[in-house]
Figure 1 (tube, rainbow, N blue to C red):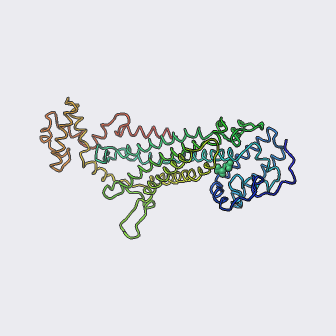
Figure 2 (figure 1 turned 90 degrees about the horizontal axis):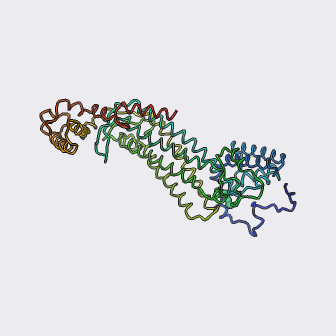
Figure 3 (figure 1 turned 45 degrees about the horizontal axis):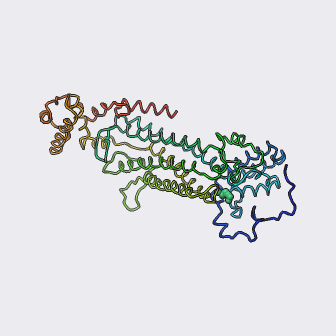
Length: 468
Ligand code: ARG
């Protein structure tokens, strides 16, 4: 099946250099090479090459001897890479050519046969998908760990009351557990999004060759199975060119970082002495070189900052793709750094957040005091009047007047005497104080998804089951 190697093949510098009259300029080599960042794909490149070679062997495109040599050579290269002995060369442009060159050096002609029925275009698309699939799996697991940390904290605080805000104005009392469970929900959707994106990542481009498929009798389905893909990319042009799966991942990553950033913002606010709602452990704070009193929430601040970087990568990839005609263009080489950085930034952030949330001290009194200021139970008073038969709009008006009176007297609604309250509605009896307390308000919100401790305990239970 294979051609006899010709002895007069010139010992060229570049794999394609037979066609060129002058060597490539040094500046162009540096500008176009990707090896110093795409070497990160090496293990996946070797994984893909192994499957490709095995398939070539199965369909008879290479001999058993060649296949054995390729396998041994690739094993040796993998070991060289893992032990830091592999010498990456700028001259060999990218991870694929570096490995192929080394293989050929190690095993001779068999190494040159590996690229039969393959192009770097389908090779790189395969490598990125293998890389991203494994990144998605570990990020899904990390999200689960973060959710568990939130659940463990929530479990201790189903009765811890703080003001729920709208417009950052005190709105209604909620429990800290309920507040934390909001993030558990956000991260659950994030997990779903990632798992869903995995379906579109997990398709095999290999076999699309440069862009049009190949005339060799290859078996793409077999390679797909061998590499754990759910199926093959069905159009060769699309297979080598689109990076929508990476963009989709970056969009999901951007949403995760958005959620992390909102949580960060709250932790930062809550750690400010003006709130004093909680403290993150010393191990996660930094001091100031000049102001001895400072305890700075650097971790959430940095996470908030890094969110911008991840959003930027999403924009970068969208823009990278938008004007490319079919099929592969060198532009696509620029997909790697943003993608790698997104994976790293996200992974590091999730890791540290899961640790940090296991090291927080909650100041229940400060939360409670804040809930007491700002008439958080005003809606409860209105609901009380509605239960006594007053139409909601009238109840709203009566309570607004009561709030004004309490504000003038600089006290909470629950501090007004019964006669003082009755001045706003004669429907008020002394059972009103039960609804004006924070606990009364909290435990009354029993609607599905509400903040009542009984509901929140159920929500925590359900989330634990989902995660197990
Ligand atoms: N280093 C290239 C990339 O990252 C590999 C594919 C090169 N293909 C080509 N036809 N120049 O996209």
